[in-house]
Image 1 (cartoon, helix red, strand yellow):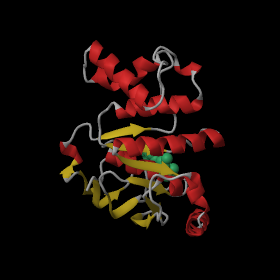
Image 2 (cartoon, rainbow, N blue to C red):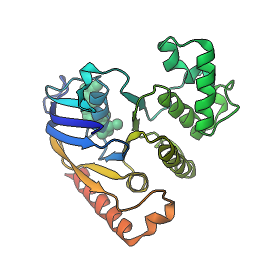
Image 3 (cartoon, rainbow, N blue to C red):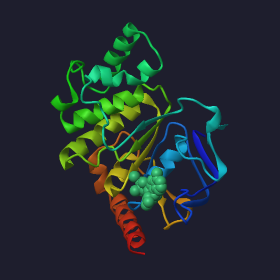
Length: 252
Ligand SMILES: Nc1ncnc2c1ncn2[C@@H]1O[C@H](COP(=O)(O)OP(=O)(O)O)[C@@H](O)[C@H]1O
Ligand SMILES: [Mg+2]
């Protein structure tokens, strides 16, 4: 198992209520898992726990069976906003994780070139973030996440700020990346169609706080996928079901 939450309970110190209690869930190695739930329900908090930025009051989080407190560089994180430094070129931005690991210059340039090629962006090494489109910036941000070398990628609503057509393009691009890389991806979204199109498994945060389980839905589609798969009756049915679930939770 790539990731396991075992009996995890968590409350922000400033809050009077628990966000999750005795939460169990797991993510298989190499899979593409989306976490979907209404805004404010604790999705990003799950990532903060996985990253070790917050500590659970009880329970354990393991990666490949090892408690995360004993691990380093096990997860690459990509936030909604690209967080590229505007005064650094693409290359300097991408190499940041390697810089922190004190890699030498030649190794950095080589790795940067390779990863840019991989994400479909050659020849923009010397450009600044302000010279790129929103979709390109997210690809650069993704490339930087890849360079952490982690087998598990945590993507927190990475496409939600993009316009509709760019978003669709980026979803197709991401699936292609995932099929090539064979890494494990955890993907937070509140977009039902996005979750259905991308994921092998969707976890729904199915109750208002505190939640103790995530509802698991395995998507009955093979890879590679294209958008026409979203028109299959079974998927349309699943989509309606998910929308109903999320709406119900939003008003309760
Ligand atoms: N650093 C923090 N300190 C205290 N409370 C927080 C912090 N981050 C988030 N919260 C609270 O936790 C709740 C869930 O936040 P979050 O995990 O960001 O939700 P989501 O990503 O699902 O929108 C929010 O309502 C917020 O009040
Ligand atoms: Mg969030």
